Amino acid sequence: MTTEITDKESLIGQSKIFGLLDADGLKELVALGESQEMPQGEIIIREGEWDSTFYLLLSGTVEVLIDKFGEAHRVGSLQPGAVFGEIAALVGENRTATVQTVTPVKVLAFDGTKIQGILKKYPVVREAIMKLGLKRSEDTMREMLSDD
Image: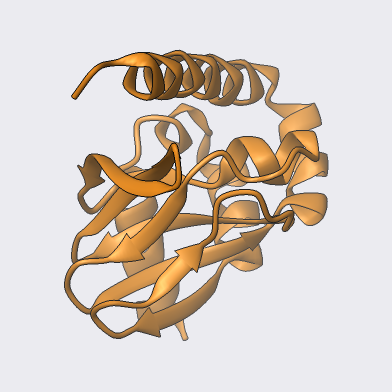
């Protein structure tokens, strides 16, 4: 079990947001993460749905899609170390995009309700997550309004 935790810690350390945690916060976070593997083509998050889970991508690639007038429109891809689904999970909003695997992936899944205690102890992490969410929302709105 120690190897798995060390492995998770190093992978979580790749995330800029989770890199703001000290050793105790990181250990607490690792204990809450559930490792999951998903095949290519699987939808992890579906736009418009509500769920309290957010994810840290450990390996593989996912693409981010938004509904643009009834058609799926790719707005980006995420690589290992990326966090996704965090805003909806932590703020209680519906998902603003769909995230689908491009390759087989491994993620750490976190229950947003269980993470709240950690975020209260580390307000700088919560602030970074909220800023990231705001930036993503702005980017999504630009994509939806573009003529492409």
